Picture 1 (cartoon, rainbow, N blue to C red):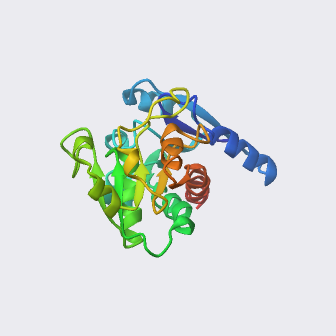
Picture 2 (picture 1 turned 120 degrees about the vertical axis):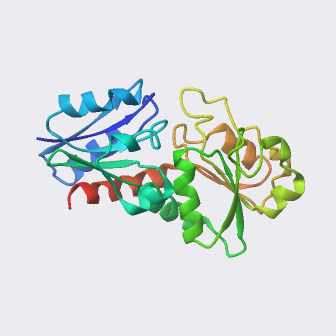
Length: 242
């Protein structure tokens, strides 16, 4: 039996195990299983690999998409370029890191983009934000990173009405609002949004986050990250089976 799974912490919010188990049933895949491996610290990762001898592949979620890099034998050039891994293939005791978040994000957001969208604000600068940056670049969309720390282009206090009006795509890559902490949301000036904005949340649990609700109240078009999850999961499955 081939074993696959998800590492991160916490993992109570994740739909990935249910998605893959349903996929296995739907497609008649009988030699595979998928489970969540919540790791309180990324340093536990090598012990997991040794313990789970049938492990063939893993997805990686917050907060380990960057932290996992030193534990891998090789990293795909695209994942290395953006500095984040969300998929690991394990073959002949070699661990190879990939990033399917880019493909998943582009597939999910492209149908939502009218022609006039030219620039974006990315909220957060973690591992998921790295994939969003690469995805926006592939779509020819300029962006600025909004972060509480000094590693972004802007901090939240610097966001003006003019900046919001100039950037008609707002993407939340932070975990704020993720189940079970559903009342949290980025400290963004939602009152500056309009019906000309697209507000995309990478979170998919809950279905409507506080970020999405506050944005929709201003007339913005909103979407969660469920389609991105599905697309990146399918891309991961293709990597594990080639």
